[in-house]
Image (cartoon, rainbow, N blue to C red):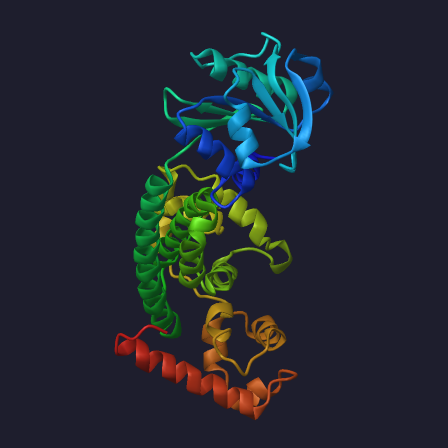
Length: 356
């Protein structure tokens, strides 16, 4: 489980709309403090001292009342039972802590010692902090998170609009056989920027819980069909054997690019197999045709694969005569006509500045 998985597990329990969220926010609003351990295992049992074994059903109201005592509260992972209240915790001091307050220092050590999620509510700091393993996450005010999500959503919309315009220009260049690696690398860069904004938004939406439903719908609408578009785009310009193409491996490499590397178009050219030097950006490239052909509804994925297997790239497919195209199994006169008409339509609407 990586850090993001842990964060989403945390959010699944404490975001607005969850039973635990109501309880801990009641404690915060009531100017109380608390240390809550979610889940119990042998290691947790080994560091408990004193307190009361309650074993009662969980309710936000009971959690609030028990927080009036100084000790820690232990609840089950499903937020159904409260096991202990007012207990003292004695985690091993071999675990480091960066905190200053006693409650937060204990919580950070308990999280590392037991592997359980530990929550601190600070009446002095007016904050909720969550620890799990070595992860520390401070929950933000929901209004602040909502504002951050809205700003990120606006940025996503802006980048999507720019990407759509660049892709429309690329389509016309592809049909005119005028594409250089510079245009390809620039669009690959745009795709990656969009997915990084999406990743950031995913965390905001998770933290917002039920309050983030509208933003989640807007993200879905903005990214509609983008995944398939990106896959076809990369397949078009990937320089290598067909059987070596692995979109997951390529995405993994893209995700590892630093913010500085993200601005270097040569990096994207290199990842696609077109060289690492700046000069490689001026090289002419020809797409295989996956992206443009996928826009022709009459063609199935099998049809597209057969056409590309025979002609290798979009330019050769465009230049092929009707008789030559008919020799491809499964390609009928009806499909050929649809192809030719679509090529002409795309050229016309792109020349008029309309996005495909």
